Length: 276
Length: 276
Image 1 (cartoon, rainbow over the protein chains, first blue to last red):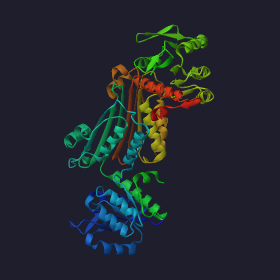
Image 2: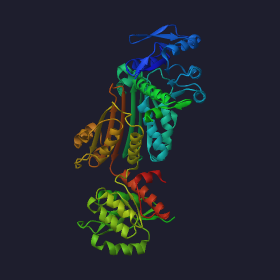
Image 3: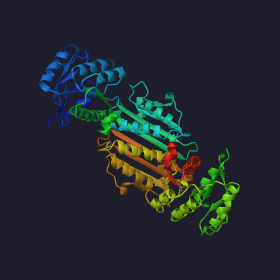
Image 4: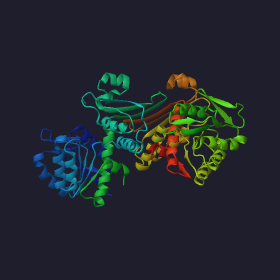
């Protein structure tokens, strides 16, 4: 089978670079040597392994894309760009009939979905590409819906550690609170214990030095009122490889769906996980 | 509303005593002062708090039960007896139209269910009365069925600690292996790391001294091949209170179902959890 051609947009950003590097290692995928980039980027190309990828500015993207489509045929786009251009990029992909995997967060998410639904193409839209994290969240959602109040009377502690630059509370932790509330445990966002001090992260949490600048560690602890029962769930992610791997699965899934004729359809990571 | 009358069978055993103590503290339940016991028990009564409970031997149980039914009316039985009498007791409850909560493990489980299905009464049959543990197992089962292979490529470590007297591997840990296998992680029962040494339990695991003689601690750790992602699930249970609390919920659930006319029906802890 011919490899699936993939255009990774958002280079030379960190996440798009990581995704491109992983794609380069997959024999079933082919990284095409073009990428959309922002107007503020001065570089004209990005190095991915030994490959040079030409960076395309917004004002030249329509013309370039027409030529790329002529040369390459069907291309799947991967978007790790910026919240401010999520909607504009989605419109561009849809108008050009390009299936895409949207890994960028933010923007107007309702409009994003509507853009795809009204188009002739399809997309995987996933604010979190970490398959195992998404699966764990789905497990928690299932428990919350199926067994309301099962942890009633339990105390909850949520701790998370992220690189120093991350000012806001973890989005994953915030989503998890909703599930715990349904499971019978009152808890508010400001009760999450955030750690941003690299010294403490290394000495007390055990975050490896190499990942002090890029990690997301979460621990949820539940204790019964009488102290005899203790549950703890932990998910610690270093670097961005988990998201790159999820992106690759999303590409394969989307290619299959396009092959089966999907049009005007939004898929989620839950769909990718189910593989259906 | 009148309290639900409950007969706890298996006194003076540890688990039945714990259940009876919890029932005594519930204003919505009334512990009746009679309990079935084994032929080898020499005591004629058991003390539950300030209450004396008369112990009934197998040879006198039919006669006593008829008199109890006359005095007390509807009684729900709780069975924490012995694997060797699970089926005989179930037959006895069914023949006497007594709804029951079967917390005793072992026996012929198929025949146990059939006995209830062919009767005019109903039962909650639960090899594990720990509601939160059952909920966690259900979450894992859901994930295994919904997201097969999502942890493919991950390494798994299972550690469990139980009181020194427990010779076999944890049943919960063994059940969990099946889910992890479906999630894409090969793992065999003999890879479970069992800890039975009280010294190690106290110094390395941190099991409180008071619970060295009665605890069930379990930790499941998943690590991605490249080491960047780490998941860990822990459930630590000290003493038997979680099972007593689950028993109380099962009694309330069964009383409600009997009230609604349930006959010849087997309920599980999942039903109790769903509360439907």
